Length: 197
Image (cartoon, rainbow, N blue to C red; front, side, top):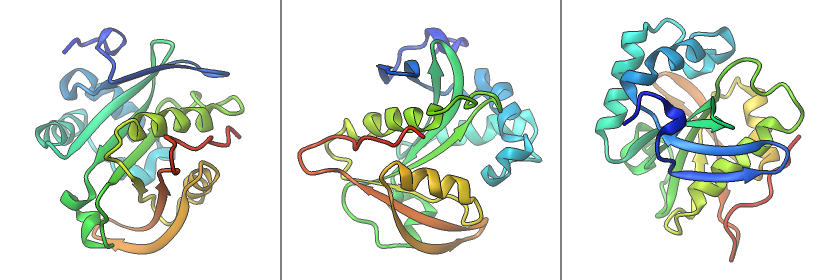
């Protein structure tokens, strides 16, 4: 895998109106550790749970994720520049699966906007999430997307609701109290139109 994410083969690529060229590429734990460390140790990323991690610890976390067949980490690039960390997972093979009744076709996601100034303009986050949803729902086996933001993260919960998710229950995980949210694949469709605001 190339150390430069801009030249890695994309698992998803599209032109997003009002956003630019979105490319989703696999995360390289060694090459991307310093970049991800900068993002996850900013106070605004406190709900990610890695504020006190070193670069080496970040690399180790994502080497572990990379070793799993049920969990995947990606970088999202906007016109060649990394702007977000995106993770997917099978809830049946994750601790969250012990907290709710997993359905066939459930697919979990995590999203962290990267640099603090990345989402400054109106519509950035909504358009980015819309691209992620299209990527995940491109696989017809994924019938429902599950997210589990920290229950205290009102902005993330509100953003997911604007993107078409519905509120689920509060759950208690060892590291946090989380709010489950679900987005069911539309009948005959791929991804709902996300509110870009």
